Image 1 (spheres, chains in turn blue, purple):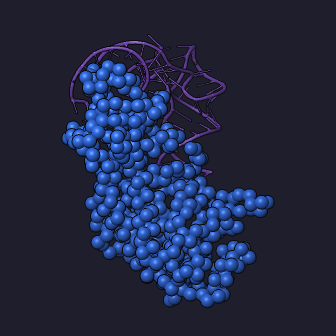
Image 2 (cartoon, helix red, strand yellow; image 1 turned 135 degrees about the horizontal axis):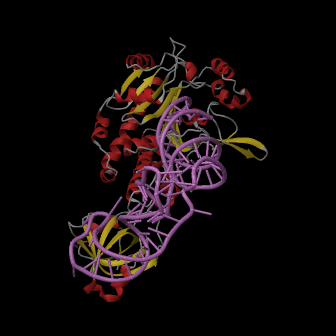
Image 3 (cartoon, chains in turn red, orange; image 1 turned 30 degrees about the vertical axis):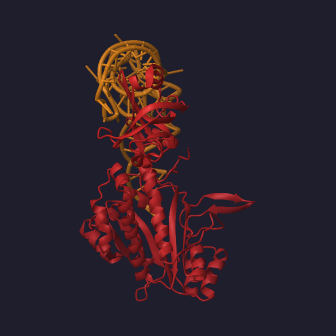
Length: 431
RNA sequence: UCCUCAGUAGCUCAAUGGUAGAGCAACCGGCUGUUAACCGGUAGGCUGCAGGUUCGAGUCCUGCCUGGGGAGCCA
């Protein structure tokens, strides 16, 4: 008997097959039962008729509970009455393990309850769709980077000091010395870019901030490309191409998942063929002041500011040329205007906020030393980083993509916690 | 840290200061095409915790705890 995955069930119409999975839902009538079975790759409606399987099998099936694991044998048929297009006319089944009192019903649940049961919540169709899209987003980014000459370089997770020195770090004990969980692999990528030219890292990052909004996670995944001999404008060109490639790949391969998520794809479909808007920080401030926002030159954007800027554009928008004092120490100043830096944030449309932050890096040793002092950073911890400027410094640029924000935008999620399998949130580390 | 909302059955929610209820899930029964099936029945509660006001508190007051949404910060 052929053991078949549900994603391939269409190739077995007319055949007797065996499937293995879990009971998603069960409806019964006096002499006919409907068993909705999922196996991780798809769903199918199993139909069991009392006259076909006999009294004993039929009554055993009556007592099946939600999420009981099963091996089911039957005849595959096309049928429009099934929501999945195919049906299995069940001839027999075996219980692998009976589930007791499954907590997640098909009705609505609250956020707190679902997060406490994330390990089971994952089984629901919506969450499965998100995880599949997430997987493909990661693959698409890797594919594009690989095709464009980038080499994957893994950055360390345990680090001796703050990479950027600003945000709060998770402290841990490193054989009697203080160590910190990485909040960025960027500085290490700069070293790697001097070795291999074009590199990137992809790993978890940790921010011990008391952030409690839909746009924040304590632990999230970031992709950080870094490129030697690439300057500010080309940096943005590369980001734009990468984002367009990812969107087009997901639209091509995940129509069904996006439909399951009830994602309106009409706005996404325009992205690959459009030119991303680029505005300067100066223009952004003027625009926001015209709109009545309480902001002046030199201020950083708040969430409502970002939303206003993004909603004024149909697609993603780059904001470039930020005041130096609100940005990180390693960013290169503009040649004619030393008060601003060659940095750009990419804001996603539809209120999803900043998905990429990038900049050209400061390649001048003396200026970098000065910035480290200004930011009151321990110079000794950055000696290796300063070496990159001592031994053949070159212009270079890079950026960081927040994976979960990209997933949330593409899937149309209203909270980042659904964009990662096991979210770490403020005061929540279970399960 | 601040602002704001909430906490009642396993889950989602009701209940003018006056005997704590429904739907779903569980269990029992009915139904040959169900689509979060439907119909009938059974069981299920120290109303987040601690005080207070009151003849009487799920409801009003105070404090605490837990969680949601937002701000700041960021990807």
